[in-house]
Amino acid sequence: MEKKVILDGNAVAASVKESLKERINLLAQEGITPCLATILVGDDPSSETYVRMKGNACEKLGIISKRIHLPKETTTEELLETITELNEDEKVHGILLQHPVPEQIDERKAFETIAIEKDVDGVTSLGYGQTAFGFGVYPSCTPAAILEIMDFYNIDASGKHAVVVGRSPILGKPVSALLLNRNATVTTCHSYTSNLEQFVKQADIVVAAVGKPNFIQGEWIKEGAVVLDAGYNKGNIGDADYESCAEKASAITPVPGGVGPVTISMLLKHTVISAESYMSKKSATL
Ligand code: NAP
Image (cartoon, rainbow, N blue to C red; front, side, top):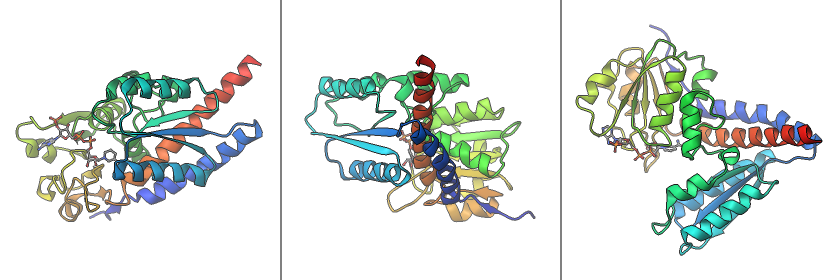
C-alpha cells in the first residue's frame, strides 16, 4: 500500500508566503506597499481574534494592515459609507469585512458594496460568478486554499469524482465550482441530501465543509480517497473524523494545521495580486 500523505497546511502556507516576499519587494521598487483594510463591526471576541490574526499575518510579510473598528450600533448606511471610502482610497488594495456583522446590518448589501477589484476575500456575488465562470481573480479564500494544497501536493482533480459536503456561498459552492473547472465530476451535498453516506463512499476527493465536528466518518471513505477538511469547530476539531478517515485516505488534511493556515495566506496572496494589478494600471496610464 502507498504511503499516506498528511497534507501539511503550514508547509503550504510557508511556501506561499515565501513566494510573495519577492513580489512585495518588486512592488516596493515601484513605491507601492500592498494594503489590506479590515473592517470589524462590534466586539465579538472570535471576530476580533480572526481580524487580529489576519492583520498580524499582513504586517509580518510587509503588507499594510489598515484596521477599522466600528461600534456595534453601526447602521447599514454607515458601514456602506466606510466601504465606499475604502473603495475610493487608492492606497487600499483589498477590503475584508469580518462576518458575521451585527444583525441590524444588511450583510449582503455590505458585501456587494465592496469593489470587485478589491474583493480579495471573494464575498461579492460578482466575484462568485466570475469564479464559477472560470475567470475569477479572487475566489473565496478557503476554496482557494483547498486548491493551493492540491497543487502543492500534485493532486489532480481531472476525471475524479469530488464530493463536497456543504454548499455555503463562501465555501461549499465556490469550491464545487473550482473543482468542476478543474474537470472533476462534482457532487455537492447539503442538509437535504438523502443517503449522504452513499455519495461520500463514491468519492475520490472528499471536501468536508459542513460545520459539524467529526461529521464525516472513516467508514464512509473509499480506500485511497483524498480528504480535504475545511472544518474548524470549537476545540480545534475538523468536520471529518480524522483518526478513522486517515485509516482509509491516501492523503488527508489535519485540523489544525491543514486548510486553516493556507486560507490566511490566500488572503495575503490576493492582496498582493490586487496591488500588482493597481501597479500595472498605474503604469499603463503614465
Ligand atoms: P455554513 O454556512 O454553516 O454551511 C454549512 C453547510 O453544511 C450548509 O450548506 C449545510 O446545508 C450543510 N450541512 C449542515 N448539516 C448537514 C448535514 N447533516 N448533512 C449534509 N450537509 C449539512 O458553514 P461554512 O461557513 O461553509 O463553514 C463550514 C465549515 O468550514 C465550518 O466548520 C467552518 O468553521 C469552516 N470554515 C473554515 C474556514 C477556514 O479558514 N479554515 C473558513 C470558513 C469556514 P444547507 O445549505 O442545506 O443548510
